[in-house]
Image (cartoon, rainbow, N blue to C red; front, side):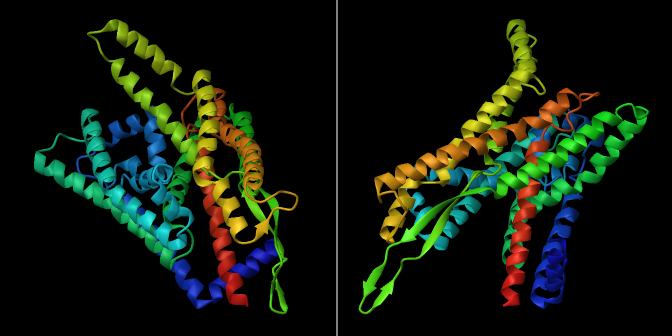
Length: 431
């Protein structure tokens, strides 16, 4: 297998078109990292570092900013507004039948139109997030207070940086290899690895190698988690499908047998994003109420609620796990429609052997998806709370593992998708 990989890699670099695509992708990612290194004027790095380390919210947002939030760069929002807009548009397909028809019946043209809606929605979301971040960082002393003109200019720059990154991602998808937006997030996660390794090594050497067994166990768990994510991401249930024979003149058409692949994890990392977003919201609210000195009863209750809803508390972990499982089912219901699939099979003259077309096929596919989604949901929930478990048993109890599950799922999914895209390009040029 390894020899096959290196042979295909050699073919990829020998082909001028593939070489150009790979070079374009690398160049675009380098441009992204250059933009992520340009900070906003007047940033207090000490206050920013302590703020980012004290909140899981900023660690979560830093993933989708591609690491731009860690130094408050001009692309600090990253592709977050576009991802949020895409999720909103996908959820709204359940509300508007015309949008649902665009997604499922219009093919690539319909999906391109929904992508255009996502881009348009990302612009006001970027502006709102830019205003919110500047006000928040001003209140925390990270940024100095600005006049209205300077404030407006910074909002425009930050919003434009997010739209620029989205455009770079679209260019990578069109002229490079892989999904551009996913690669930008991937590059941001990977770029922080050297800093994380250096910090953990400093902690290990500072403790006189006393915590070495803990780090060995963490590495073993990480390797097992990566193997599990790869296995579950690629796992699928194959439902056999047979096409009925059709006689036209003297020729017989159809009669072929194929299968309908149903993935074990159809929702990807979206349920974890939903669950984290909802759990982080009450943290912010109760954290603000806990500072109300004029109402000591409200402040004390809010402080207690903040402790319960802050990792690594077991209450937070249980709520996190349950919400990931529930959102996995919800998002699978959004993206997978057994009614539409059964109608398309019946319309094309296909059927599942032993199952009558129509409602019976719909119920059969729905039952299969319900069962396999349970396995995928439990696995997603386990991966989500695994960093919290590690954090609970950590000797220094740091939050360095707080969003590791999300980053792990994103990295593995992007690498697998990139390998498939390269393999497809190489196979197309071999024939």
